[in-house]
Length: 197
Ligand code: 5GP
Ligand code: MG
Ligand code: MG
Image (cartoon, rainbow, N blue to C red):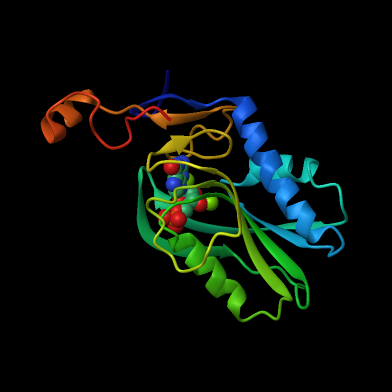
């Protein structure tokens, strides 16, 4: 168990499980983009580790750049997505693949799709390491993802809780307070996000 600020987190994914998920996304994308010299666009800050490891599994010609958006504050999304780093130049006519750490509600993704909608890219795809399919509320179908995860707050491998935890090699999940489940569902461990994996 680890503590970041005021919250406790318990192990959720091992380095080996993350490795497999990253490898899977990279291989899926590589199969489709082998000869297309794509531009990978990492979404800062959360995706920095994923982008780095993804590229190690992508053996074909490609370019990499980054955008920076901001929406999450603490444990829940504020819904405000700001664009802090603009759309890369020279993407006209190119294959663009967004590399995201995690797709949650899809608000950030919606903003990304909007950001690139005025550009004349040849094709546009999304690859996310983690995907919370239960809570995803967007219209855009996620093109590539490494691992579907339940609706729970995770940290590590680039993902933060109030800026801490990005350096962790494994992924941890927020430790639920058993009293909350007792009150809401009548028994300990019965609540959302407490089932194994
Ligand atoms: P969305 O806009 O899809 O609701 O949220 C996407 C962004 O919120 C992600 O890129 C990530 O920065 C942040 N986020 C969503 N879920 C989690 C989570 O479980 N843990 C952390 N640390 N950040 C998350
Ligand atoms: Mg992100
Ligand atoms: Mg964050």
